[in-house]
Image 1 (cartoon, rainbow, N blue to C red):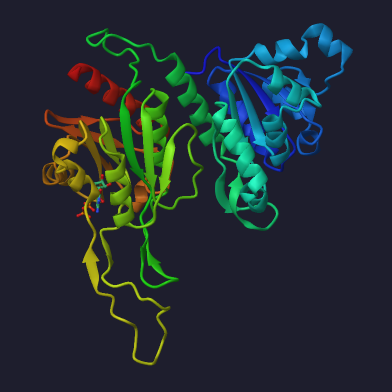
Image 2 (spheres, helix red, strand yellow):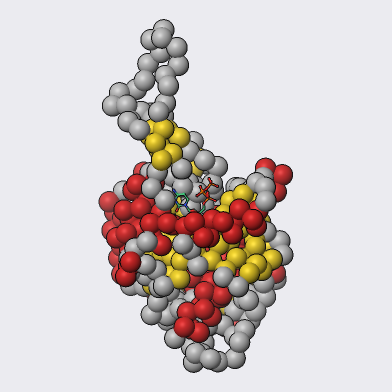
Length: 415
Ligand code: CTP
């Protein structure tokens, strides 16, 4: 899928630079060629030798090198690529990009390029949240710079929060999504089957991750959903050109590039955000919505007061998929749900499709032994009104791409 794509990877000075080594390997496995520019700061974390060994080509690091200029000038370097990727994109290099500074080879290439740029920010949470960084990110987004991440989690500096560079898989997904969207040819409806179709001009809605339901101000009910499948689907739909809204419960995943992400916590918040996103051409409900919530959330932290554990009276949450199916003229043109089952997978999923009024159900076995929940792979049975299609075991990214392609074909066939 990335064959013959030329990526210029700019490695700036952050601890996450080590992740780019794995990224280069994965990009090359997929047929891309990678050329690296290493900043002075970046060289504190990875060596030119490791980048050269993995990319299989010379690493550039000096703006004023006569030999480099003779072989390939810095302007040519910045243009002889299909995509510039800055990973890790530190607060410093983002600030330089936003203000148009060009004081080393990396920033000069970024200023001189006429090619799309994708950044994978990585920094301490306070630096990420700082007003200066926020403005720089907005400035860059306004200029069309694409972004993947950062995600939330433990940081190398010992703090916790947003600022972790997206994982190689997510960066890879963003790059593939970018090229898929860019190269997807606009085929007339009724064109050759199996060819890539576009979703340009279409609107998509995806729910992802778990919902969490408060018990009191410090405790909640949750589930083990990672959000990987839903996020991958949103990326794949956006990759085909759909204007995509991702409504996500709390996950540790980075916000995908080029997608409008609405962060929610509870099922009721998720439903409200989905309603706001209507009308859409397609909705994919991949979230593991908590079926129940505590009827009345305690205003104060529940205390042990000698009377034994509190009895939690649960009440049922709204069913988002079903509600979208009953939205009258706002019903999504194509409504897709998942069925997470641990037994009689297809039988239960067929019943769920009817009960919830979905067009398609993607059934998957989530028994602990399958490793589906939280894992990277999935085995899908696609159920529609004509029957069941069994998909082989594949990565969640592949499931997402195959689904997005099926959606595009279905929408094109309907005209
Ligand atoms: N779903 C939803 N809102 C809910 C519950 C589920 O939108 N309150 C959606 C899920 O996103 C998924 C589909 O419904 O697309 C099926 O979810 P699943 O957890 O498999 O089924 P449940 O409806 O929870 O049924 P059960 O727990 O009885 O299996």
